[in-house]
Length: 284
Image 1 (cartoon, rainbow, N blue to C red):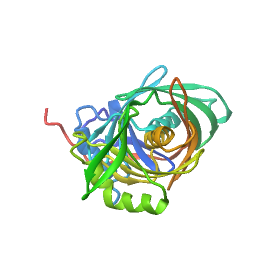
Image 2 (image 1 turned 180 degrees about the horizontal axis):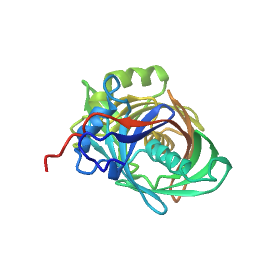
Image 3 (image 1 turned 30 degrees about the vertical axis):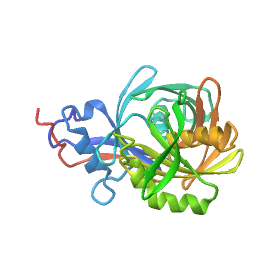
Image 4 (image 1 turned 90 degrees about the horizontal axis):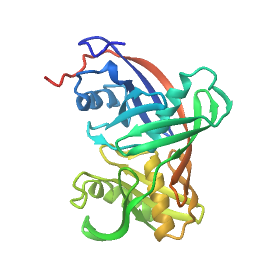
């Protein structure tokens, strides 16, 4: 490990869940580095490694603690796909946990609360987890003026801020996604920004979504976005409380119980490498 020394290459891992990709660096590799600047540099698709976000983590006896930076360098509280990818990296490093079905638990401490992952299947490099994502908070419908129109939205928190727009057809979902995604993500109603999902209830147990992620833009998938869309659709769109949520990257299962939201899906480990450019300094 480099210990954050200037000019020393820094080890990283890369994983994705349904195309929502993240880079992972252990905390003691980047001591003293300006992590927001590092996230912008390493996440750039053409000039860096490329990812939707950077997760800096520290191992614990039960799993890890993590800090999440979006591709634009801004902080985020939690990512459902990101915690699952981190879980995959942690499980991969433990001998005897790389084949067959298992019920091992991994605990990830995030700024959006503790997330507990139950490992359901391990077939390296793919690991399938059911994650306890906590309870939704602040769930309500509102009407916002955006893009010259009035739009009914569902706002809530699933550890991070979410705004869901329910539509009757995929044509309307696609049109609103292109027209309103960025505008809603940066709307004055959300002073710290918000993640935005445009959703259609295809049938009670199947919801289709498009995602505009805060600090990133369009993404192929979002774990917390899938959770938010499922809760919004069950509350205001006629969906069941257990549903498949389908994004361009694939389908995840969301169950909304009395105790919590449960998110089930896989994560793939795709690469390990060394980041060669000097670490940006905080100047402290």
